[in-house]
Structures are given as C-alpha cells and as structure tokens.
Image 1 (tube, rainbow, N blue to C red):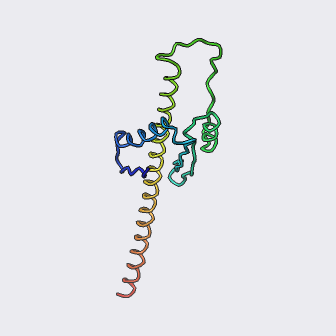
Image 2 (image 1 turned 90 degrees about the horizontal axis):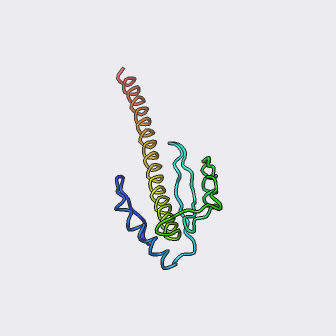
Image 3 (image 1 turned 45 degrees about the vertical axis):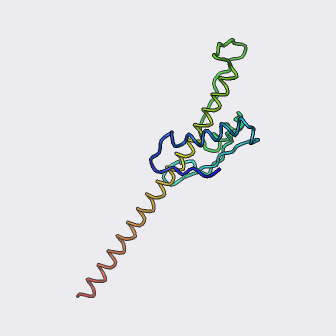
Length: 148
C-alpha cells in the first residue's frame, strides 16, 4: 500500500480509503499484527517517536503506549458477574468498537505528525527571521561605518 498524502487541511473522507484498506486486510487475515509508527507531539520543542500496536489491540500494548507517552490512566472498575444487554450482540459490538479505536488511532497519528510538522516549520521560520534580522543589523552597521 502507498503512503497517505494528506494536505494541511483534510477531511475524514480522505482517510476512508486507508480505513477501508485496514478493514479489508483484517477480514482477509492478511496481517498477523499491525504497528503504527508516528511522532507524538508533546510540545513545540518535543516530539516523541512512538510505536503503537493497533492490531490486535491488547491491554498490554495500550498500557505500554500510555507509559511511553507519560499519560496517567486508571482502568475503569471491572464489571465481573454482571449481566449486560448488548445489541445486536457482544461479538458485533466488540468488533465495531475495535474498528473505531483503530480508526481513531490512525487519524490521531496523522494529526500528531501534522502538528509536529507545523511546529518544525514554525521554528524554522522563526530561526530564519532571527538570522535575517541579525544579518540586516550587521550589514547596516558595516554600511554606516563605510559611509562615515
């Protein structure tokens, strides 16, 4: 599969081919596991290279991701021995829930990468402006000295 080329402004509709690719690949059992690599945007100066296992989704892979990103998380209380009515049924519900989590993780990774890219551009432009300002001051000083 080719890479996703999302512009600075993109919609969920542009991500649908990628989501569909994963849905079809998982139905055909084309992959044993799928890992997502992206840069997690922590702040303007810090992006953390991150790896997340999005198939199969396990509690261990989820906990590892949260630990890497230094995100506090507490698991909800368990509902052992409770009867729940889930429609249409639990299997369909869990399949859809996992699909939505996977799609969210993919979309989030794209957004994290885009945010980091914009931050890098902003810092590069600020550095260029600062360097140009310093160069202009230096040239102005040299010009004034030569004129006198």
